Length: 172
Image (cartoon, rainbow, N blue to C red):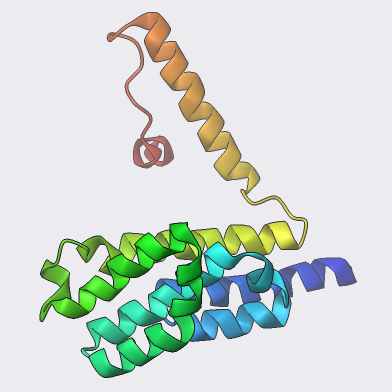
């Protein structure tokens, strides 16, 4: 019984971390992650960089350019030693060159989709750190069903099955 209580508590903590990252509150997400998986971000530098980049983006969106620049120098610059981070870092820093960063070529870095991607990656990493499956059984079932329907569609031709829609599935 204690194990299920711990599992529920961890789930609530992961939920809070996920929502913090999704809302752009990266520092809180980092702090909470450190509480339940102390060495996770130390071992997963890509994820740590992505979370710190969320903080930078929030500063840029809040028009706190001086603070954003200082944050980039102190927190993000060390990641620039790795080539894959350097390109991303250049893209993030380029946001400072625009009065309206949402109109810049790097506007996708400001999007909710980017935050969603980082939040999803963080949640999967926390689950893997706890030796739990990174996808729920329902997610796996929907993925499998989608692949099967695609295969059936290829076999049956265009007149076969329509593309899978979760919305339509739930209605039926």
